[in-house]
Amino acid sequence: MVFLHGWGQNFLSFNKITEELKNDYQILGIDLPGFGMSDEPEYPLGLNDYVDTVEKILEHLSLKEPIIIAHSFGGRVAIRYSITRPTKVLILVSSAGIKRRSISLGLKIFCYKVLKRIYRIIARKKYFHLINHSGSDDYVQATPIMKQTMSHIISVDLRKDLRKIKIPTHLLWGVYDEATPYRDALLMHKLISHSQLHPFYRSGHFCYLTEGRKFINTLKRILSEDLYGNIQKHNGILFDSDERFDHHYPNQ
Image (cartoon, rainbow, N blue to C red; front, side, top):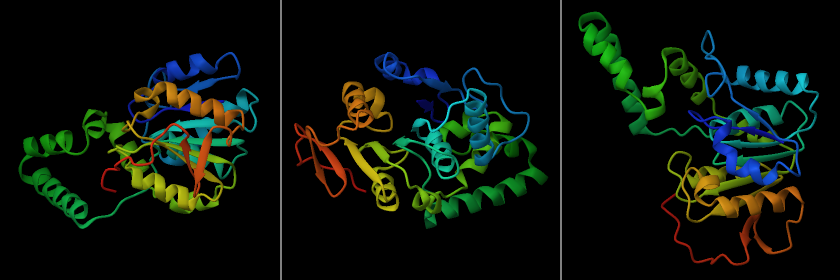
């Protein structure tokens, strides 16, 4: 069982989960390059570089057909890995991978690029302030190499990859997720032919922390292949029998 963390996180973020599973499964936690105990790369990486890193680690340890549990950015790596390398089960937790396009976002990017070019020539202080304080919190906090790495990663839209996934896939998602919105879960569920969607009604981006006990129970149920014991299935979306069906979803 391989755990892949999100951007800015590391394997330790899964501690409460792995403590519950370590007696029954062989667990491998990977700090992806640039995070946790792993060194920062010497040059900006792309998605395939991270996939190759995971593959080399698993080959070195002679681990074949892993169960992959991946959160957010780690989900990007897991999605691409699973369509090119043997994988037993794919469990995506609030996974990134859907590139959203909007007029407002496009306008912001355009303005940023224009100002960047102008300031680079006539106002060096403003130039450095712009590149160091623009973007998401993760981007602002990243080193120059990891900023470029992040730009490479988020430019990839994985919709075509999602359609190619042919293994059992589970989507565990907080309905109040703002980083990777619940609408992304619905789209991934639609694109992945062998997928089940497990909503977490009290969670945002970190359902495995916010609803830890439910998350662990859901994982155990998935891993034991006991999918139809105490759950009800509605169009591929799985609800615990004690969940109410009248939850109000955020606008998606």
